Length: 305
Ligand code: ADP
Image 1 (spheres, protein in one colour):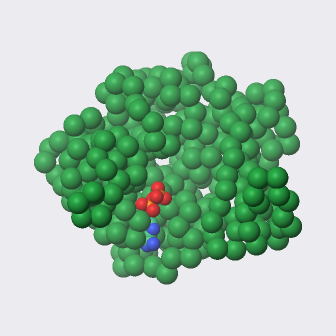
Image 2 (tube, rainbow, N blue to C red):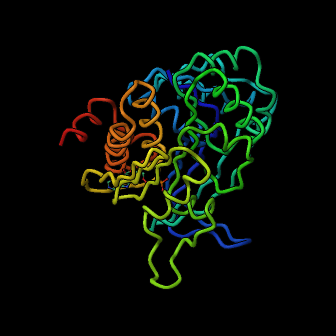
Image 3 (cartoon, rainbow, N blue to C red):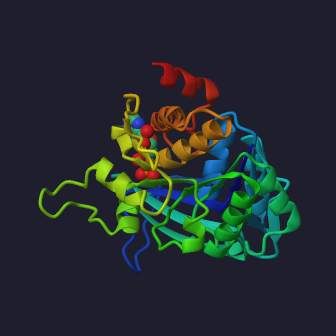
């Protein structure tokens, strides 16, 4: 079982010919309302990948909260530990222009109130195979969850996004860190773009630097797949299956959710990264972060190809 501790937002998305400038009103095309937030996205990805998944998070007492719970449950996520807080749910206001450029404001709402983990929440973490966290809820909560997980023998997977410094106590509890190259550069103080060559630093170099802080690390690199390394001396590039990419939004969430499921099922970690790469690749074939998420069978097919 995978327990996710993380954010839940409603994404209010308007497509428009151009992004509005300050003070400007533009006439948009369509409006959609989808579940978002890294916690919800990765819980949904894990649920779609066929893993038994529960989400510890906070939704508001507004109508968005009702919608969010239904969307999560519809994806097979156990919502019995979802807190309802009086007030607003987390909301992301998103405008996407015809060129695919976007502009986003997030009001965390109930997500900011996810503090002081309760006994049932801690029990669920202790009973899980994998705890999966990101950094869109208070870092003290993520740290407390990770420390409780580690003490109970639950593996801790941290997708360290958005970029921020991590408390030593949290780093010490992480079993597997998952980052993209921008997040990796932020954590290691290596440049995002190599000043001499103009290229991003080599995946092996970044993973090696991450292993100074955590015992196992995965670096995702879009269509290039992922790098995995650990302190036992394993360092491998895992290619991604070749697919026609339509929308790469949410590839990292699909990857991370599937990785937590596969590792929690006891698969070898490099094999779990390979399966997660298939899930990430599967997610980019369709438009929409959560609509395009591949199910277990689709992941298996890409993995086998
Ligand atoms: P993020 O969304 O966090 O930036 P990435 O873009 O690195 O994450 O994508 C995560 C994973 O999804 C990659 O490691 C890869 O396995 C898969 N993936 C992403 N984009 C593509 C693509 N265009 N083709 C195939 N696989 C992809």
